[in-house]
Length: 251
Image (cartoon, rainbow, N blue to C red; front, side, top):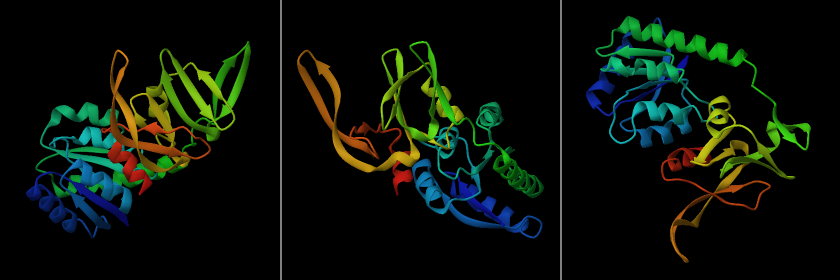
């Protein structure tokens, strides 16, 4: 039985989807585990109830469906995404995000059933896929070193370099944060524009002070959340944009 969650900022649209789900219950058994009217609320609830499929609107106030889909992909148990929208022009962007299906409103019951069945098949295929690379390749003094992915606490972009931090030492890596985030969203979460953190290394969060601007010798400080990391004394700041996702991970 598939666990389904609905995200749409319009209440009538959510009610329409619930009616359609009831209509196809016999041929496509499922359990509706929740609904939300905005991305922030959706992220927190989805992290708590871990649905298998999310029926997601594209255009919503503040954070849209495409951005929410990127955040959901970084959850420990990411759901399959079925976009449900009145706008066909976002389909290419949706499938770039590995969406299972793209349904145009008004949705027909048979198309919704097809999408749910396709989502179930996609999850089964993903379960059979290998977990991805096991090491980062680092060139150091003419030698190629293999650093186990499981040992990485965080990666941080500094100037022109990407630094990989482990419990034992640091390494310089010739890759980009964006490529690693795209390849390993099940292992790492972006907490700031210049930092990825291993999800299993997050011990919690705490309030700290961040430098927001510098004017000569004067610094302006602002209170903000920071990530507490296992095996590391350094605290990494969490940007306001990434805070809902990090908050969902540490609940």
